[in-house]
Length: 66
Image 1: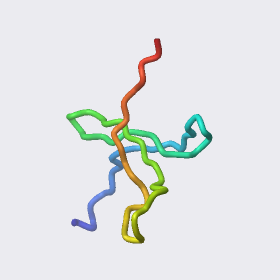
Image 2 (image 1 turned 180 degrees about the vertical axis):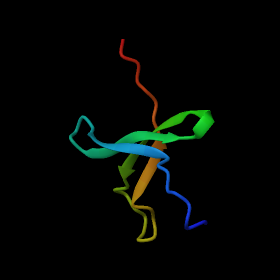
Image 3 (image 1 turned 120 degrees about the horizontal axis):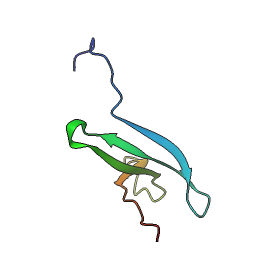
Image 4 (image 1 turned 120 degrees about the vertical axis):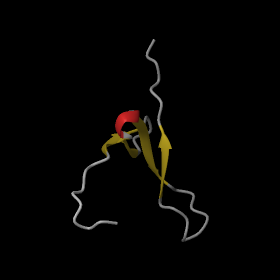
């Protein structure tokens, strides 16, 4: 990795709450000319062991409001 390279953001996250009041992160990751991917980040509450990930990232889809 080039250390002198300018660090450019590749996405943004906001703190949100679900219907039960639990916090999670929601936002987008930019893929440049390929657009953006909406994502959500949840705390992993059911870790199998200490080496398991603390958070899980999932792609998010907009729910149509009709």
